[in-house]
Length: 368
Image (cartoon, rainbow, N blue to C red; front, side, top):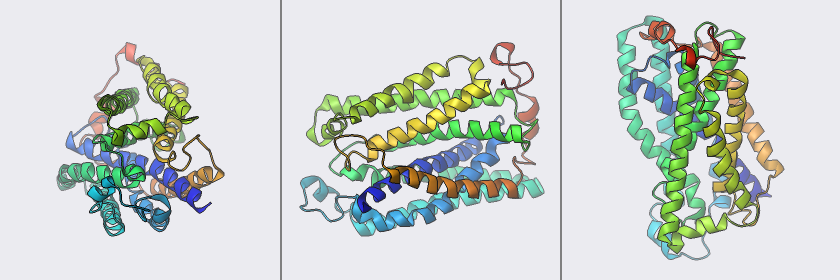
């Protein structure tokens, strides 16, 4: 039971971590490109990224449960692959790297949000420049730490496996799920009032376009990893996919192929659907389900090698971590303005972008 709980907690933790990391990435991307269209949703992404200190606290159970999760922690024998990776895969460096990852993410999220809130108070150009500088440095730190965390916390569940693309694979899932989530949060806040009159149909169209782009990017990375490994036919690599072709794991794989790529790809092809509430809200829920299925496909086979099992612990861990993060996120929204009040590009974001008639679901705004 303890091992089942450990795996269930890891799955739920990585699911919500992907949302926080996606939020941090898009905040930095906004500043790196000095974007205007995403100004009104920047604060929502900053709050999402600043859940990272909470994620650091929620990591403590994983730190305690790690010996129950990772087979290299107390190996029955040291095989050749573990011998080659022993400098990386050992308890001491594992804990040190985890602390480093969480510290860097929390620091970046804090600094970017701190200067954003200072910009609300003063409107000084110094705040904008500070956020850009942290983004310049942070994007490199982000790439390195996300890759390391994906390897440490997911890939090392089967330490014999080799894949040079796994970090990008996890990043694609982070960006895809976060885009869908922010779309839904923006819709809810626009209807609730904090963003009423501040979000244009163009912005929804852009978020939908980003979601479509990462749908294709995810599929490309997933297929490239599979094609290269299967074509090379090296046992240290192919065994990972062979395990996931057993029992109902094959069905989960097919769900990911069609549900994570084909369904959202076809659903987002039309221009007008990107501004339809019911369509995009449904797609946001679908994105959560597909991201969870994808992470389960990566994490759970070592525990349940024959079939996919949805254990009560899986749902309990999701509810616990999700409930904690939701409460903190709501406090952030209540404590601060819902959008950057003095961003130099705010006026441009509200007035410059106009949809062509063919791109708008309704002339006045987002469709019901």
